[in-house]
Image (tube, rainbow, N blue to C red; front, side):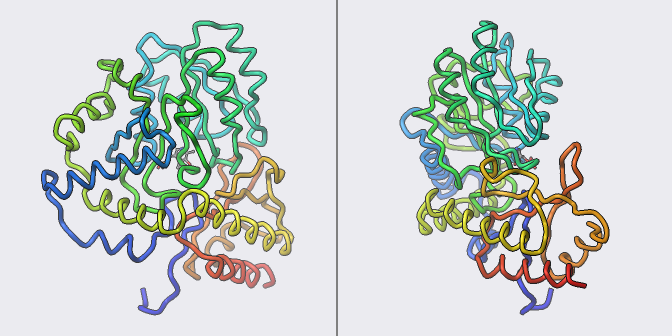
Length: 364
Ligand SMILES: *Cc1c(COP(=O)(O)O)cnc(C)c1O
């Protein structure tokens, strides 16, 4: 790429645009047993626990891999082998959890809503009332399939009232939308380095209720995804059990410095909301319609309906790609659509640039 070519903008569900200071940290080697790397690991775990509102009750277990690894590790390690998981599903990431449980061989039931409907806490209440054998409820916070925000506070209130456990896939919302693992009595919050935290991809993590984790020895049928064993390892010597993604961890620590400097969850969420408003307004002006109604929409990623001819997604995608802007095809099971993200290390000028390129293409 030419030195003064415009920065690549990844307006996707991830990986996302990262800042120069975050990528600069990759330019160093670390030994996994170096004192400063062990300190970095401990610091990361404490910082992530704090962002989840879990300080004092929860602890963070880091894993190499993408976010899916963290979700699978949480289901493996935290659901007892004789547990029964109720999955509240309204998109591909919820369905992926069902596929994991099927493969692990854990009992589960799926309650599915349409992709443009929130999961319903009232229906959940009736289901938990009717079935005392359900031990765990799992839900996705922002269903990145569509961009929909699920009402996890209401879900947590019902789950707590019935005395069950709750696991939240907060992958795309973590760091951007508030979550309070202590107050909501969450058993687990799963997320990764490369979405709202704006690190590079390669670390997944689970913020786990420490009291529950203490009883999870032997749940996992997988060696490398065992959160209990990894938590024990961190306690014993501060180290990752297997080769840590050292540069990725260091870049996440640097990304968290920038996160703090920006003003934490409130400020990051506010920037994403501004970018989201610009994106939706700009696209509406060009005649595009959003798939979701505004009250269901999280300020993370927006699904736009494919308007049909003369619009065609492939040439649209290619034109943006040539201008250094990456968007995403739709992931809905029914409606033809495409998605544009509004998270990552991007500014309002970046979003304006993207909208200008989109406008130029659409006017051709
Ligand atoms: C991105 C994402 C994941 C995990 O995806 P990876 O590609 O494995 O990082 C899981 N759930 C949600 C809601 C996501 O947005």
